[in-house]
Image 1 (cartoon, rainbow, N blue to C red):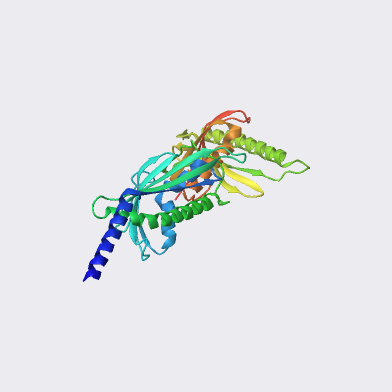
Image 2 (cartoon, rainbow, N blue to C red):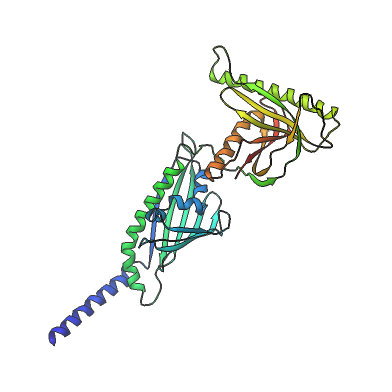
Length: 360
């Protein structure tokens, strides 16, 4: 029986050695950090990490088991939102991810639980960087967890040695997918940091309007910029004429305006613009119209953007709004329209214009 005692002694020595190494040399937790630089503005990237419905699309865990069933909380993106999943993959299995803190544009902290394992802290940090081609973003993703005390502590430390490599690969894969999605050519490059749209539901209102048509064809040898200026002047002239016509009609029919001037684009192609210019009104609708028409203002669920500045900068506000919609994966259901609070004709004129984007 001496050999059995010897084996027990050897096992005891090995176990003691492994225990000592685990306690004194191995860390009590797991901490993995990976970084990547994305050639898109920080606001665009933040939209991809602050909404778990979008996170699922680039998450390395979702990629490992695409057939897993996902359930999302009804909370809006950001703090409080959560998702859970259940799948067949042995490593992913079932789990949950919740956002516990969201600092606008800079940091998203979550709690990640996979199966019955330790809950991990997941922190994504974003830093804005300037580049010759425009703003870009440095993204840092950190996953950390601490081993529980008790008999499981030392085995947990050894398990982390293998788990750390897998998590590092997962973070690298997820960040590469995030970069690819953020830099997709269909994702606009406009920087909408500081852009604060409003969301609401609008009822329809009676609307007296006239149609304005503007051709885009410019003859001669003018350059691209000159051609755009020519078309822009045509649009402004059409707006002035349309406004004058509809104001005369409102007076002729004794209608009471109930809102500011509304401009609704109904056609925008390579050849021309066609839009409605009119006012919402109160009063009995005219029975006989000459060159005007009666309809309803656009209605339904909308995103509203406010442009308060030079008329020449209005296209920048449009670009920011479109970039916001694309980054947040908000589907637009038709062309936008404008409500003109303060108008002007010259490029340097200070205007106040509300832009409404119909959304799903």
